[in-house]
Each structure stands twice: as structure tokens, then as C-alpha cells.
Length: 355
Image 1 (spheres, helix red, strand yellow):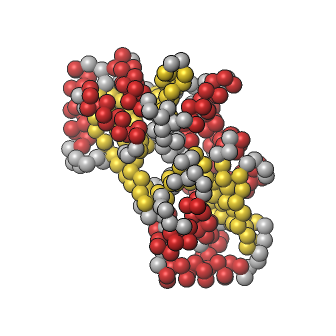
Image 2 (cartoon, one colour):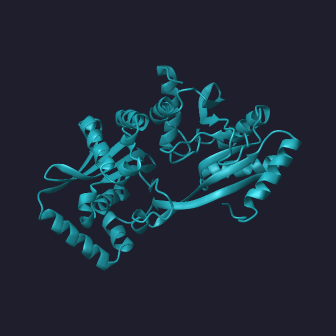
Image 3 (cartoon, helix red, strand yellow):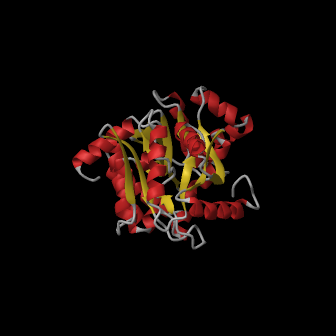
């Protein structure tokens, strides 16, 4: 899948996918595989229609289901993958799921079930899966659900901002911006393409690493693998017109930075960093205020925050929610499915709505 011809077909699939997922596009997923799967444990499951690539999902076969020693098949996600939905050509969603589940039935090996994490719980991909599960009479369960912040509105950026935050909070942000401007020249820049990208990446990595993420070892620059993946992915996104960058500077030094992946009709707010020395001026909120311009962007109907549920900052600005979750699906023969049913019952015993 890393040949020029394969990438071309992959990119064509992404362009006609029923739902965008930048984390499964060629420029991102190949970079992630090189960084996090050097042993080649992950396989790319391809679905073809009339000889053309029409669906793609990375899969692996873990021996543990979270903390339990239960082998299973699973969609492959990692710490920097914020959506696990397959790429599927528009109109072929049901055919994709039928083919995937038939394949899983025939290739269970030791796997007890199929597990799909970071799945959208609305939209054509999810709806088609539910239809196919009903057709098959196949047991499945949502074993975890969360609602994360999403931006989706017909309001203008200014009107949305006024509707989201109280007059008191907006006044406080204006005051913070004015106090910040007293320290020096404050500018906000919005850029796309790869011009100046290498320097921008280095600034972002340094900015993120300077804060609490660097202290606890979760910053991108804390590990060579994530650093390499981040650089490769952003350049790949930029060359395909998938990248938008926002930068808030004070005397030409960045104090807040944000990277969006533009995947019409949606977008994904991928990474944000800010200088914690200026926390009293809310630089992260100021750059998110500018990010509301997505509401007026041509061809963009929504933006996924990629943030954890109940995020202390973005949840107070972005008012819509996108449900995502983990799905477990029965595969194989009667005995395997009976064992799976018992596992699901035990897992959901304390919380029937999903854990």
C-alpha cells in the first residue's frame, strides 16, 4: 500500500469516502504504521468493488482485551488516532460491512470477537453497520460511549461566539487580550500549504513540550516515534491541501498554536499547544476564538474537536457534541458467539448503556 499507484488509489478512496477520516488516509496512516508498528502486526484490510479500492480499515489481533487476556480482532487505533471509522466509498457502506464481517467469520483464528474503537455512533457508516448486523441477526454491543465537543452550526463565527459565552466571559477575554497586547505586538496568523512548515513544526513541538505534557512525558516531542510521525503526517497533509495552521504570536514568538485537518465536508482540530507562562491571558481560548472561522469556511459543515469528553476548555466554546464509542461484534461459529455473549453480559452487567 506504499507504492505510488497504491497511494493514488487510496487518496481517490478518501476523496469519495462517505465519511472523512484523516487518520486512515494514506499520508497519516502510513506515517503512523512506520512509527508505531515496525514489526508489521497491523494488516490493512482492503475492500474492492469492480476492481477499485472501495474500503480500507487497519486491523490487528491483540491477545488482551484491555486488562483481560482475551484474544480478539480489532480495528487498529493508537494514542494519536482520534477516529477509528473505516474509509468507505459513498454508497457502498453496507457492502463493506458485509464483506468485513464475512472475512472476520472466516479468519477468526483465536479471536473471540471483533472490536472497533473510536467509532462514530451516528452517520452513514454507523447506520449501515446497524443495518447489516440486523440482517445477520448478529450480536453486537456498544461497550463504551462518550460525547465530545463538535462545531456544527449555521451561525456566523461572531454570532456563535456570542451564543456560546456569556457577556461577562466575552468581556473578560477582551480584557485578557488587551493586557496581553500591553506586553508587545500580538498577531494571529492562519496558514496552509507547506511554506514555513518545518519551522512551524519545531515551534509547536517546543511549545507543547515546555508545558505539563512535557513534564509528564506525553508531549509529542517526548518520544522519537511520535515526533517522526507528527512531522511526516503534517507534511503529508499540507501537500494534499489537508492542513490549516493557526498561530498566536507575541513579538513574533508563538504562544498558542493549532493544527486542523481539513477534510470536506468536515474538519478535525488535531493538536493545540500554548505557552503556560501566559496562561493568565488565555492564549488557548484566544486561538480557539479565531478557529471559529471554520463556520464560514466554504465546503466545511462541521469540525470534530478530537478532544476527550468534558474537556475543560473546548466544551465551553463548542456547543455541539459528537458521540463516539467502542463496539464489540460477534464473529465465527455458534460456540464462539455464545462465549462472546457471556463476555458482553459480564462487561455490561453494571452499566447496560456501555462502560
